[in-house]
Amino acid sequence: MDPDKIKFIKNDRFAAYLGIELVEVEDGYAVVKMEITDDHLNGVNTVQGGVIFTLADFAFAAASNAKGLVTVGINANIAYFKPPKGKLLIAEAKEIASSRKLCNYSVDIFDEDKDIIARFNATGYKRNK
Image 1: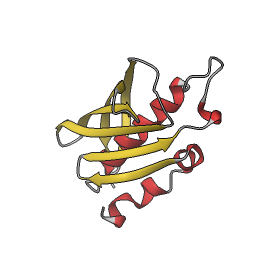
Image 2: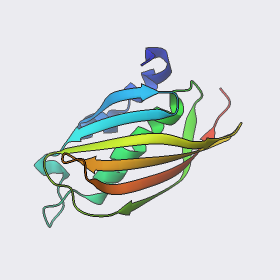
Image 3: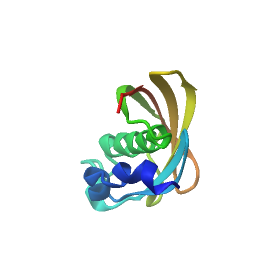
Image 4: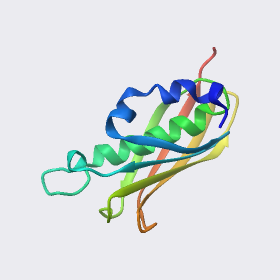
């Protein structure tokens, strides 16, 4: 990981508050993880959907900004497949397409058994510095 390319990603206070950690970051690719705690659960004792969305969004941000251009999300959606098992969530972001100003990413979210629990798709806009 090039620390200069991801320094502002590491400054994400909300991700830190949730306990999200960078595992791997390369141009157009990232893996992040999070230990599930009771604070991440909703009223029916499953992981709150917003927590899963935030984990995926952080993976997208890390992967899309690793190229050194400030990239912000302009559209995102998520499909939830099933509740996670265990106490660990992992999100893997991969670039699908990129042009001069736009990029598209797919993020798969897995539980600790490596079962896919959700898929997040995002479009990013590459800002001028």
